[in-house]
Length: 311
Image (cartoon, rainbow, N blue to C red; front, side, top):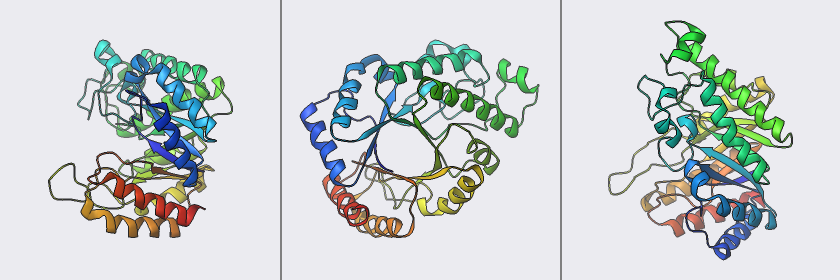
């Protein structure tokens, strides 16, 4: 499986003729699946738009996987924003410091809200799969009353990992029950502790498991490029081992966002080498990377290397 990762794609102003061109190009590049992010903002403002995107993708011969983004602060995806639902329901928020406000996964109210969100997605749209993008704060110790009731006054990181995995198995099982044909992919950050990733990779409803990672230095605007995230190659041995133990297909997402033009040559060499040496069962790449200094130049590299290896 080769998927195009499309974060916050065409959901504010959708021009269908442009979308048709993009989807046709994806198919020409060797892509068979498009991954579209869907956030609380999209649930409020882009329901019809998302329906158009799903329909046009299927007409182009692509499968559609949804990326549930930022829901209850417990998954990533795009755009970068806190959960609106949590802001309206602060009693469900983990009281301890988190990267962004995070819902307490031991709280029945959090679980039921996320399930309701996913039910709308799965029953209203002809989805082929889900990509669960980077669980957030899965081992961050919580002192929410519902966490204390589950694990006692002094929960550990291992307790938090157990609680998150229980929550996630319940959620993915619920999604499976709504549509047993859904293909569910999960990826984590390599920085998460192995006791967590070994545990969550065994989720019986997940088909593919792995990690994302970079292939070059990054720069948000005019600062000097720097290594912001681990290299995707460095996660392969861990991916293969954990998937073998859990009986899952391997997954890798090659990131290319925030790329300055001076990194193009380095990225092209590294991307070429990656596709030569590593063959995930589910490979995902950014179709048109966010915040690139020379987006057309970067996109030309992506097309050239993918056509070389994937045709």
